[in-house]
Image (cartoon, rainbow, N blue to C red; front, side):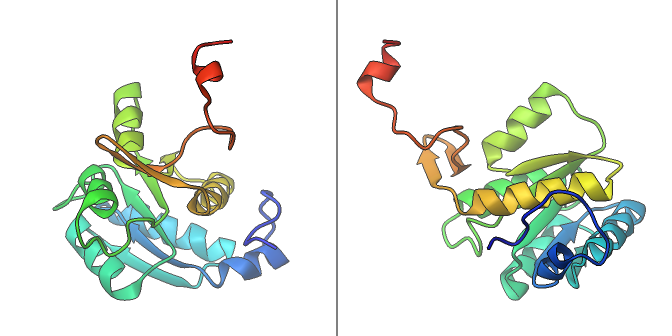
Amino acid sequence: MGIISNTRFRPGSAQNDRFARLSVVVGDSQDFFLHQTRRTLAQLGVRDMHLARDGAEALGIVRTQEPHLAIIDWDLKAIPGLEFTAFLRRADGSPAPNLPIIMTMASVDRMKISRAMGAGVNEILIKPVTADALLRRIISAIAAQHKLKIAAGSYVGPDRRQTSEPITEERRAGT
């Protein structure tokens, strides 16, 4: 059975016990959101959390703690969330090129979403973060970890295609 079988948030449920095995790094330059995310993760049952106030600190945690998941803010100081993601996905000797990444944003537009997804983010979460929204993104990001990773041109990250069927020449031609 996977880490989570149902997306409904239920304090004290068996699914929350599965979150107890997760190690999560949370990177946000704003103390309020950093601690709000920590509290929400604790409500979901996560026990192993590492908080970082900037991208350099978050990267150090990824190197030393080997977390299962990263929740990184777009506006992270020192190394912004976008650069943090791109480094993990593409750099030679990256400590965790397949680490599931949820990017938080205070404001959103199509360009930011496109840039985040292009860098290799698994999920995007708009602030303020609710327990239910965070739960759904965690489940999706962890599920995506088991999907095929691709490297095509400048993109390295999760395969975003909705089907596992290979694209044949007939399908490309629209027949």
